Structures are given as C-alpha cells and as structure tokens.
Image (tube, rainbow over all chains, first blue to last red; front, side, top):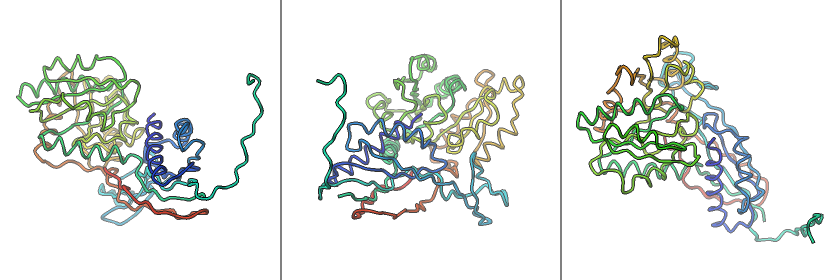
Length: 134
Length: 255
C-alpha cells in the first residue's frame, strides 16, 4: 500500500506549483493513472483526501483518468490492448520485441485553483452550533 | 478567479531524479546497485547470504543493505558472510525510496565497494514503483509461491532485469511447474532471463553475483518492455473555466 506515498508526492508537487502561482485554494487535481502504474485509484483518493488536510489542497477533488495499456509489435506493426495481467508478447506473430505505447502513466495533468485575483462573493461560513460549544 | 494550470509532472519525478543522481554518484565511485524484490518469505535473505559469502571468498568487494519494517534479524544473518551490512528499519513504510537509500549510504558505504545489494522490503507491489538508482533489478519468487506469481504481480516481474526462482530443492514436493512459471514471466517481461537457485543445495549459486559483475563492467542489461514506454502522452486540453497557464516541466517517465 504505497498510495499514501503517492498521494503525498502529488500533494507536494501541487503545493509547490500552487504557492509559486499564487493560488489561495486548490479545487481539483487531475491525474492520469495507467493500467500498469501499480496504483489503485480508489485507495489513492482515500489517502489524498486525508493527506490534503491542513494544506492549500484541503477539500480538493482528485480526478483520475485511467489510461489503458497498449503495445505495438515492432516486426508486424500490430497494436493490442495488453490487458491485465498484461500480455506483452505479440498476439499475432508471438514476437517478444513489443513497444509499450501507454499504461505506465502516473502523471499530474492539471490543477484547478483559485488565485485570488478576483474575489468571488463567498458566503460567510454558517453552521449549527455544536452542543459542547459555549 | 478559478484557473486551470497544466502541470504535466510525473508523480514520482522527485524519486526518479534522485535515483538518477544516485546512480551517477555511485557509478563515479565504481559502485552499482542490485535491487532485490520479492514477497516476504521467498528466500531473499538466504540466497543473498550465500552470494555475499561467495563474493567474499572470491575477493569481490560487496556490501548489503536490507530493509524491513521491524527487527534486525536479516542484517544479523547477512553479516555472517563477513561483508559490510546495514539494516534499515522503515517504521512501517512498505518500500524504499531513492532519497532514503542515499541517506543511508552517506558515511556508511565502504569506499572500495563495487556491488551494493539492496534487499528491498518484502513486498511485490510498492517497491516496484520506486527506482533506487539500481543498475540491476532482480525479482525473486520461490517455487512454493505458485507459478502464476508473475501474473499476479505484473509490475514487479515486468520491470525486472533478471528473475530468480528460489528454493528449487522444494520443487518436486510442491510440484512446481517450471515451464508454466517461465511462460508467465515471458508474458509480462518478454526476453528476461530466468535462473533457478537453491540456497540450501547450492544449485545456481553464484549466478546472481556473476550477472551483477557483468553489469558492473558495462555488460548488457535486459531492457523490459514495461520499462520502455515511449512518451506519447495524450494531453487533455479540455478546460472549462478561467484562464489557462502553461507550466510544462519535468514530465518524462524514467525507466
């Protein structure tokens, strides 16, 4: 379970970019996750939500775009979906010299953030007073 | 104002950059790293102990670093070979990262070392994602684990430069189907070499050391299909709101 490490790496990189870009709050992070990246999107989303607490990403949504794994055979130029478990030998000619076209992505594509240039009217936070509060 | 910023950064870019630095720093000192990955209990330590012993007898300067969540048991076992050994306790972390390895080598790795064996945390999932600056990545599976292990953990076996089968002395007892195992390895990592070993009988011992030494003198290393994805990133420029800034930076996959 290294999704927490992955989530922390995502948050670290987005924080850096957000600070440099003058962001006041990050709304969402878009990630490409390849079929062969070895990362479980649901587990990553869980860790991401936890690890965002107290950072400029607090409450940000993690959007993951799955990327199917595809390979191309060098000798016969055939292309195929490698599937899971992957089959990296050419299904047509059996050649072992395939080229992986996609599937290993683990990439931050884009980030949506508020940069504070125009203040949108934000309603004052309202909530019910909890019982213990005096 | 809400804006969408293209980052296009590999999530593991920092680890990959550190791994590349470490590989270069160690190469400058004449050291290569061998990264050993397997499930817990597959016999990494037993095999490594024998290989270290052999290296010492042959006068090859080697060192070993072993990582576990807890206990120094593995370091104690490996130290019996008489070579420099370091135990790393990850305090619950399921894998090693390049920065951690670099930190542990500072001030410890003996100057004359040629081969550094890193026994990763016993885990076939997480360690597969982290380049440690190794020149040879080895995935191990014991005959008792089942022939379909490479299919169940395709990234661990798919990214290996060499695959070792351990505990072959038990092969008959568990009716290990070697042909099926080899076919499954070939499916996820076409062309990778598979070697059979037994730390108990001594079968296949020395092969790991020989392969590592061959790499150390610049010999060819198997390049797994899975590690060579060409960068045909499809960028989704589907932004709906706000203005749009381009921040392209380190976006390449390192194998």
